[in-house]
Length: 127
Image 1 (tube, rainbow, N blue to C red):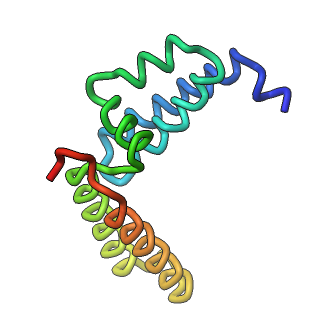
Image 2: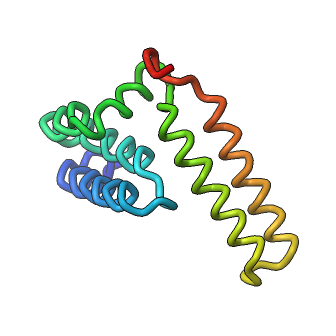
């Protein structure tokens, strides 16, 4: 548990996750919000200033606040995620990367993620 009290290490871990979140904002198959939520947690333990900066960020802050307040995901994020999952399933099914059993497990897993995403509430005022 000593690692959880190491502020410089937690700060670095937070920045690593901010970086991964930024990559996710560019690459359609990589998540953004998950990494930013992890960064927010790390910053909450290591740097109130960085926590507040990320939480109030004009681009990423709203999604983080929606999740904190309502466990909600905005409709455009849901649509983008389902499209990305569908594209992934399509290309995995057409490839020879996995044996049939592995492919079925992965498709079931990705479908379950999609189902979970679309059943999350939509933020108030988002239609």
